[in-house]
Image (tube, rainbow, N blue to C red; front, side, top):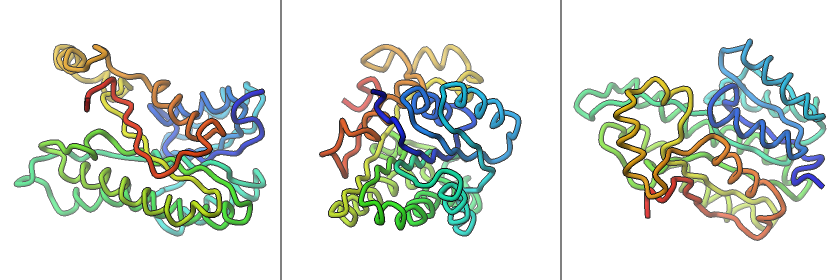
Length: 248
């Protein structure tokens, strides 16, 4: 029996990186996957094909998670196409790093909107469906930066710390209806984005991590799989650091 057999998941920002890793692991474990992407239609179509090859239903939706009305429309479309939503992974996120003295109001607002308001938008949008079926698992993607802060990332850290406070509150609100809400805080995960960085810098980061390596999208996806499945049926309101011991 696959861990997510017959479940339907919404994963935001899944056309690449961590989101793509989660979508793949979920499909392998029997979940039907509805995922969002912002602009790369070609990558989304490729992912649809790959996921469908696992024998599950998969569909990509172009949707801006930071837009309240688009988020409502997305969930309505997914419920119409898939029949339900059992799992929500709020993964969409951006960075616009700068020191406080140089950061613009626009760059602060944009990061808060995409990283934090999107979590409110989608959680509110799936709430009715999950309340009706009296079950659901909501997993929100924070960051070790949201736990400990980071110079030059005040906007990003604020958005990711906000996700933790929001998630703990939702866990308290919805727990009596068997809806769980947890947070994953990834550390240094090696994706297409980090591949563009200088190798010496990347190796320096790896050396500072107790497990002596960067994480992979699959490392994060496996933690999501645990929190989405019945293996974690008695876990809610928690933050799991997937960071190779970085915050130890």
